[in-house]
Length: 584
Image 1 (cartoon, rainbow, N blue to C red):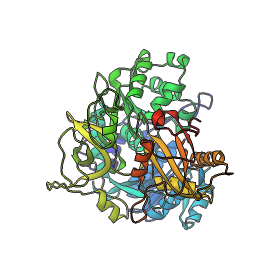
Image 2 (cartoon, one colour):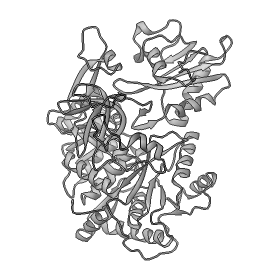
Image 3 (tube, rainbow, N blue to C red):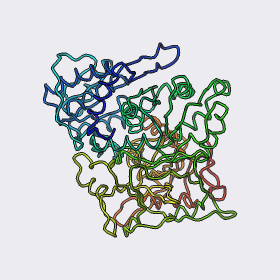
Image 4 (tube, rainbow, N blue to C red):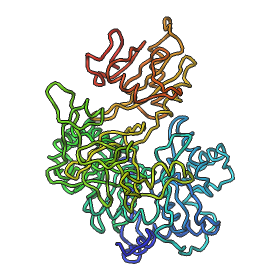
């Protein structure tokens, strides 16, 4: 497939050769909700051309177009229409709860400055109101399945350097970052993914991941189209309501490659019943990708053991590492014996030192995310910028054809992340902000150099959580949010009160308000809330909050809260102060 210069050339070739092959297999919300819908390459192409003609007639080539769809079919049509027209697709979550979602979308709209928005007919009124609130009420908001006027489509001049889409990621609500992904980036990364997963032309690939997320967009929609195969798609809501639906679909529709973040495998372990498991056939699931958040060795082992009776092979589970700034994939490895894991000294790892375990010492098990795939990986000291030898922990740097051009309209941020050079003079690297090490050529991710929190495959900025909590009550002063590593990342928030005298205050109620706020606005179940006296949170001499220092105090049991609500597993018994609630 390397002879194709753009994704449009490639899929046009598939359409010429096999127009009646299934491109999409769209599953209903439940077995009672209707039948699956099948869309051929010919039908997908016809619908995309109509929409692309409308875009070209309005001069949208090179302009941004928001895609805000709940319908997986219409999302696929709109995405291809943008690529066909030479417009820049901007996938955006269509729905969400709370103020955080509204602020997030508003910031994204202002950054992308779209010329049009494609959505579903049912969502169009709400999307129009949202655009108006952002100052973009004049931007056309079109139901993609109801093109008002058909215009002829012409193949635009596209090159590997033409921007295909913007993948918004990482940045806080006030400063979203759109990763600029070109056709060349996309094809290079899809080639690497296909080679790594063993995906062959014409195969069925799919899952339930949101299509505005890079794992869903690239790994479950564009990969099967790249292969000339079929994308089998289940909605995220259908999976969350009944996790067995995902596994049933894999067996029922012969899906060979599918994946999700670690939390999804854990959810299947907890909520798929023995009766449901007994009906599964996972024998054709060749590659079960685990990525998007830290991979738990315990979850991987338990999943392999639990579903072995359904035909799942140990070698199917494949931990991967990737990020949107590299289009998607950076590393991974299929091993018949299953994932490689290593137990290390947990306390030493907190200091970014890799050391074997010792009796009586805290232990953490690291899972190898395989070998670099279509990319080069270096482990670099973040201060000296010197490349570190194998076995040393440093920042993960990546370079290769899948690494994106930069961030949309954000040269300062792009300059900090893209095009970095080591002290030895090797350039062209992407600084991931993640920490890790290479052992026997395999990448092990140990943590993050930056403050970002990853929950269920989503990137959350601590300041967003902190600002939301501070709005709850005038008693709340400075707060800091951080994650605690382990088998899964746990979210902790330390919140100062503006008083040294808590007597008479409903501290239990305030703690519940914090948990409710984070659940409603961010869909995060916080694992620890500590209400503390003023001056507890560490700051620099300039007054900036030092999250890492406060996190160390928490892990060492040195914070003396006025009140806390915390999961038992977070702290060893010796580190827990007496007289406060621990469980919830």
